Image (cartoon, rainbow, N blue to C red):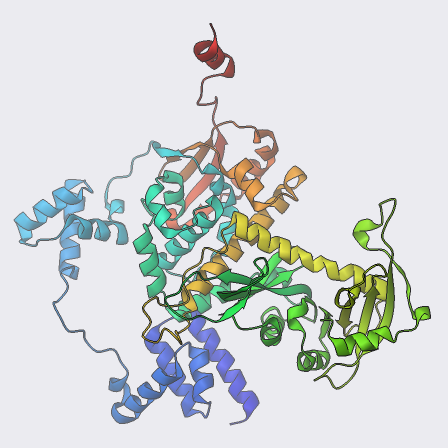
Length: 590
């Protein structure tokens, strides 16, 4: 079969499996691709199964047909929650008009001689929505007060981000992790100390998941679900078929362990080699959003990861052209040579001041230089004047000289710091414009700073097992690390969209400032059969949110995990606290 036909089939299978995420179906489609001549590695990757598992199942299929790959009945004790038992529980709920697990447990044992714990009955009531069997009350009921009422302001953007293909367990996991990132709950075991009705309701559960449940759900999350979730939540529609302007850089997540031997890398702030993992985000510079993520061991350099990231951005966003800013970690002659051959790509990368390169820069004649002032110093009275030249540099591994923007600091005495050089494949932009453009990659560094301090980016699941059988060569488990790191990227993008929609004084505020000003506020949750009202207590930022409340209420947003109840935002008639003057007289007078 021609290679182009195979690629078309592989893409068709990926699209089909994205709409029908079933483990047996994935295996069948992988075997189908192998039968058409597609390699096992390609078939396994397109179906999100391992090559080893595909090979063993293919042998079983050749030996026994479909019986060799279809799931077999599980051994052990038969489940107590049979369809008959679930039917009896439903009948008891309808007859008794009560959702009390204790009462239903007692009647089930008396009438049907079936003994179940109250936790199992409560799970059946929640999973099968047996509360719908009770007569609906027309009046509104107060379900509680919440301190994190501001998270409900983000629901319009949460509904845009959340893919419709994920199941309820993955949705609860995603919403819980999102809430943890936004309100500053760094570690999963901190959840046991949080009792907030608003956060629990937002996550779609009667109460927040505890730390052990969160850990178990992360571990049980299938790899193909993580891949599907990642592809469905990338902001593709916002940047589809356009010209991307991105920055790609790494973030080092230090691992403080001596139980296993992890790959080390130089920490950017501590200045020494430490065991770590690396996160490579692609950051869109125009709107300030994160587009993609790659997770690796700590020993992987940006030069080893950037090409696959760039190809992924080109394929995912179907970009007409791509302009990328790269840090010095991408310095490698073969990488620059391959990027230079990509007609759709323009790169601007910082060079490393190696001795062989400095010899070439020292040969630049004085008349080739012109004066240059950095953008942040042009308004000052005594700006520092640099020299800039447009030159060509030959480096090892690159077949042709690279256009180099050489910035000379005349006052610097150390040879290694005297030159700041940028390599580029842009043939026409003036040198001073390129020198002004490169510092914009610090927008990604600022994004990392905000995510570390405001979204706890460094608080991520382990990529290793502490009791690995080979502590000198531990296995790399990237699934949980990738999922949580991407959820925190989505939280950052969501807050960027939120502040852009608000505008005014909030347009340039960081995530931490928005959380302090808008998310930390009291409200009362009132529920009815058709609506969920979040009634905010008046607070200082109220005048700036009036238009936003009207915009949210005009959309009549239905919350799928709350039985399609419509979200309504309101203000309380009066504050729920004693006036300041009365407090002063009562507590501090006389």
